Length: 398
Image (tube, rainbow, N blue to C red; front, side, top):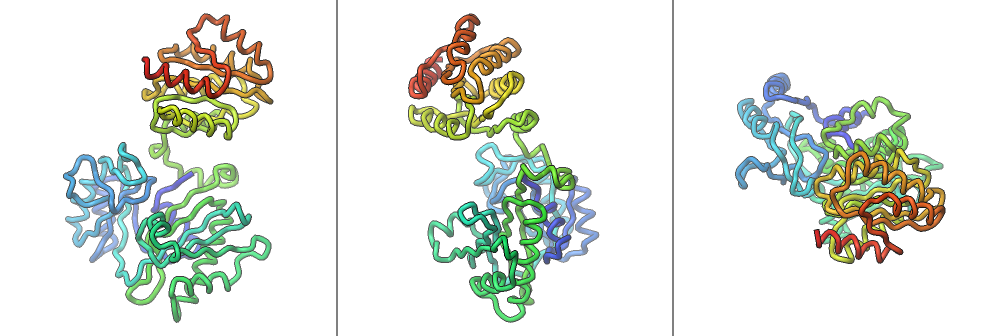
């Protein structure tokens, strides 16, 4: 689960992190009031969407040479003008895709005098079973670009989960970032506070880009992106309360109600599969035969008929879907349950696109019999390769 920058900074502020003063705004009037209350003389007007690259992004409704989604204002009038241009408009960044995201919230923040920009993030490193800090002197840039062009400028430090955070980790990070004097002591505290927040709030990823050194020589958190482990949210109702469903795909929200692993994609072939590995293989083979999947959907190993019906309805609700591939290996999940779920869904919502069904495993013959006797125009498939070729051919024929 993601949250907005202003929410992340409020959380980090509670842990003692050096965060600039800022006020969220949902209307132009609120943005103007925030600027007046803060006093200036410089303000940063930041679009709040769940995507990076906002500063370099472009608004669909504005001229191509217009400024991006993060702007420096030198007067309250500029704050007002920028708020008018941002609120209610669609911001397109490298992470939103061409559709972009509508800006419904702003964050009005004090301007900062920046001497240096650094990069710092924390994430769960599955290879070592620990929290790893990734740092670089190249702050303010896409970390992917830095990794590609100058990988030697990226350093990783791990915290032993048994020992917990120790000051030497912070010192090593400070040295890697070229910090000196009082900044080293600040870095030791800052990294320790970040680690405590990361663990206590069950974060999956925390990125600060940039972490700045001010003209006065102090460290300050200038941006913050936080993602939480969704499996641990039951422990954090205060985090769940921060969820902004307008930033999420409606189909993904519906899928979460039925505990379905669903991710919307940009293709035309809807997929319903059981098992993440089989689902990934299904997506790959669709690509191999020249089409693109419209979703990743894993119904799980023990799905009920109701769950399968919900999954099918979610797939058919996507207007991009021109064909559907059901690929089931019956282990714990029985093929006849899938068949009945598909029939229930088709009865409820109809079938307007080609449907290819591949069933194998537990109760395979019963499942095939249910589909065969249903009278539906379903294309059977013997194996995954056969299924992929048939759905691609059907979609192109349609």
